[in-house]
Amino acid sequence: MRILVLGSGAREHAIVTALLRERAGDGPAHHIIAAPGNAGMAAEVEVVGLDATNGSVVTEYALENDVDLVVVGPEAPLVAGVADVLRAHSIPVFGPGRKAAALEGSKTFAKRIMDEARVPTGRAVRTGTLAEATTALDEFGAPYVVKADGLAAGKGVLVTDDRAAAIEHATYWLQHGSVLIEEFLEGQEVSLFLLSDGHTVLPLSPAQDFKRLLDGDAGPNTGGMGAYSPLPWLADRFGSEADFVEEVIETIALPTVRQLATEGTPFIGLLYAGLILTEQGVRVIEFNARFGDPETQVVLPRLESPLSTLLLASANGSLSSHAAPVFSSEVAVTVVLASEGYPDAPITGRELVGLDAALAVPGVTIAHAATARLDDRLVATGGRVLSVVATGAGFTEARSRAYEALGRISLEGGQFRRDIAAKVAE
Image (cartoon, rainbow, N blue to C red; front, side):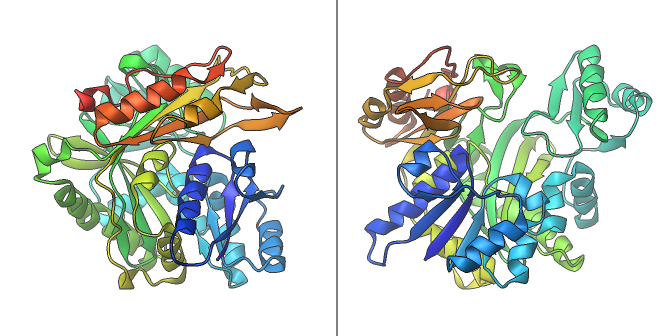
């Protein structure tokens, strides 16, 4: 197939890497194009400088270049309705239309859908003024949970015991729209990806990510500093990972997908369920409308079923004819290397060296997030620069490989967490 992957981050690089693995199979090689891509993807596949948020531009390119499938990676093109324009021209696309993508683009919309579908989630109040936000904060009490209603690049959520900090966060995001004040939910967090064709849902393997910048879950929230998969501790509570996944499908994923279908906005693509395991049961923290980052970097390396087949089946409505995806028994760990100053004011333009040495570590791959070639030098162009991904027979081996590889990479001022998957390895 000719597959166009929209996006420029580590998530999209992980998708490209998974599609490239299929070239080792019996079928013909895929021709993969990334738009706009990054330096890491450019070394492996064709990249084109398209505006991924412009539906007309993407559609014109897809038609002129006989693209068989478009895979939308980041949230911005989805919320902009790029998938709608592609579908209007009968181009298969993996990604929900604009209205269904509001499941991520508007937390208020997501809460309404969950309420209608009777999906278990925390109580929330939508506020449009600082007075309303302050009243809601005092009603729910500490710890305070403040969320920007719209897209916020992973930085719109604050959980804190500091009332002044909660008010400050609400004040900032109220300048950009409404803010949700939610009740605090306590428990282990789980990320679960679910493929949907608008009716049928198939699960991928659960993962856990690390949102805080510093070891021990300290520091500010980020877009994600690392992740691991699978989650062996799920068996302690649910009997098995499969039992947990089945419960999520029956109580959360299918009710949500069916509610969206009933409202005439079928969800076609990747439903990301951010979950928390409370004493009262599984609750939804948030939905996203696309693969998560950095969880994609640990879920897809373990996937043994052909990714392209699953994505196309989601796009053309034939998921019901496919079995649940199969995953390797190996584990995967990813650690994010970020620029100095991330997440508030990342310093960019600094050179990256040692990637070839890092890739020489067994089981290691690298997903580029914000890199570019400048005068034969590889430089960092953003906050989260790359994800070092390692697989292994167990978490001790995978962690050792990931951190050995990171030790071979040099980025002035670079920062990363040193405790990713440490507890599960112990």
